[in-house]
Every structure is written in C-alpha cells, then in structure tokens.
Image 1 (cartoon, helix red, strand yellow):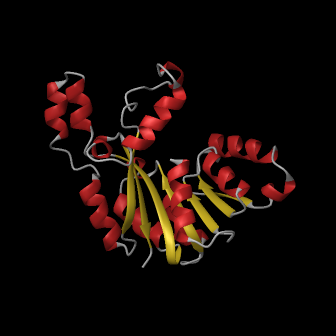
Image 2: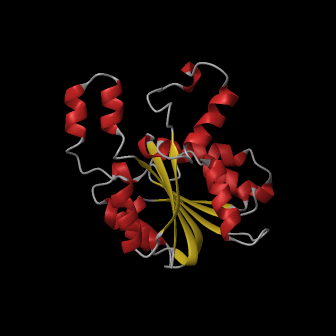
Length: 222
C-alpha cells in the first residue's frame, strides 16, 4: 500500500514539493515516518497511549532533521476540527480507522475538510463487498448469506460518500487479495517477493481487486 500511496502523491504534486500531511489514526507511526523520511511535514493523530509510546520510540531513533518533521497530537480521529484549521493539509491519511467508529460518514466529512483545494485523501478500509466471498471459500454458508445483508462499506457506497464530501474518487486498489485470511505474515508460504508482486498486480486488476480484504481509495478535494 505504501507504493500505491507514493504513486498517487507523485502523480498529484510537483516533484520535490514538501507536503503538509495529516495521518489520522497514526498507530505506531510507520506511514508517518516513511513520509517524513521522504521530506514531508507530518502530523499524526492518535488516542491510544500504547501506540503513541511506540511511535515516539521509533521517531526518537531518527536523525534530528527527520524528527523535526514529525508531530504527534493526542486525540480522537473525529476531533480534527478541534485541533486544525480546515484546508491546512495537502494530504490526509485515514487508514484502518473507519471500521472502529460509530459514525464513519461524519468522520470522513471532517477529515476531508482538513484538505486544501486539490489535496489528496487516502483511505484504507475493510472491504464490505468481501466477507461473503471469504466465508464462502471457507465453507461457512450461513456467514456468507449473512454477509450479503450487511450494510458495510463497499466500493459503491464509498465512491458515493467521497463524492458527497467533496473529494471524488481518483483511484482505488485492492489490498490483501489472496492473503486476507492469513493472520501471521510469518505463516505466508512460498517466495515472499513473488507473493508481494502477485498481490500488487491483483490489487490493480479486475475482478480480483473487487474482492480484496481491504480497499485503498484515493480522493481529491475539488
């Protein structure tokens, strides 16, 4: 997914431009650190004290020039309007957050307001169109039938939501097409490099990307 995000940033902004990045639900800061190393100014929002401590530990090991480009704000993902001025970021990340909030539409609208005109919104969400496929492949027919009745976020609903909040979909990818059921990466069989190549190709190709465990969507603030 890091490669996909890099592609979108390179395709959207002039080469060498230092971007203002907001990482909502920063976690341990892996993505924030990657972007800071690339020269961008990154602000991470996180409420979990354990994750914040892990991020601070990782940041502390970096050279001073990189540390100066990283900032952590302790708070909830839905409180971006409390901490920041609308339109103050070029890129907003919201990865793995929507599935854990009660009002995802409101959260998305809030984080989209943080984008400057032409800014990039990057979402990583559980694919609401995938559970029936996963359950069916495992032979759990009851769970497969139940999955058809859920209202979880799928591509169609997410596309409409992004249009409604003023950040229409620019590109989308499938993530974990073949490996979603593998909980431990160390248990993945075979050649890891080959696996990553196959996942990358499948995540860009129909119909495979449509049943990936996760969706990576990129919208642009109009």
